[in-house]
Amino acid sequence: MKHSEKSFLVVGAGLSGVSVSVQLLQAGAKVTLIDNGINHSSRIAAGLINPLVFRRMTKSWRADEFIHYLKVFYRELEKTTSQSFFHPMPVRRLFATEQEHDLWLEKQRSPQFEQYMHPLSEEDYTYSEGKNPHGSGRVKETFCINVAAFFSATQLWIKKHGLILSEEFNASNLKELSYKGVKYDEIVFCQGYLNSSNKWFGSLPIEQTKGELLTIKSELLPEDVSLNRKSFVLPLGQNTFKVGSNYAWNDATTNVTEQAKREILHNLSFITDDPIILIDQEAGVRPTTRNRRPLIGTHPEHKNYHIFNGLGAKGYMLAPLLSKEFVDHILKGAPLNTEVDIKKHF
Image (cartoon, one colour):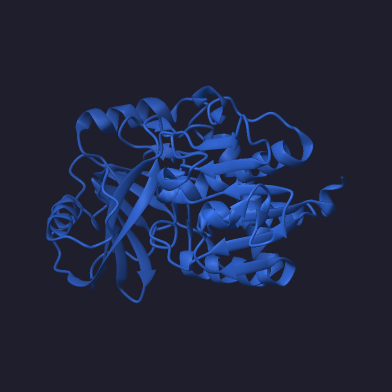
């Protein structure tokens, strides 16, 4: 069967489901995407893309590959959809300690890190738009996705080239490869933190990690850079900012909490003491894994059932390339990266 003749039912229209659907359609497959329109993770995320892990001052897993591919993926998708949602976003890390400053100095000399770290300059020691007692470092190759614009653009494009069913998925309506009497060649589950209720993949170790974000207004915070220390401050324009995020493990509730608000505001105090106005508070639930590796692959018994899940907090960095590798696996038999392949869990 040619790729263009294969039909897919993709369950879940968060970042995972949308990315997989786009890759399948671009490969010539037929796609039906089913979703209830309620999303408690991808659409609430800040959409920041940063190749570094500040806590250990290391590169993110496969950062070189992910950064290279995502720039092509998002820019081509902007052209295809005639929409703008992918933007450079400078990130400045305000060092928490002298040791963190020294670690940056050490790493910036390494060939592995020079493409991601600006060498420290006098400006980094005198920077005054955030608390800067130990200096600060600027990160290269950092971006931001306008999440609302991204989903608006991709869903319109998927509707144009495939089909979107705006309804709750009901597993009892799935009989072998038929859903509500319509036959498909392959089924892909992208259900995020709801995966635990999936009868085929529910045993996989995908955890429910709640995170909350604040939207604030400030006349003094910088609007040309995302500041980071204990939390991040993401400029949205017109003196408004996203601030976050916290982590609450094994919590699948989506109500906002006073405790999270206090925690985020406390963390913000390490960046600035300037007065702010609280505008909004949101909560989402991330599908995460203990080792921070997504879970991707094919069911060992149901060979036409697949999963693409567990992208976690760095989803907008990981999704483009991993969805391409996943689709190449299904359509062309290409091997999956061993760190994400679900085979080891069965």
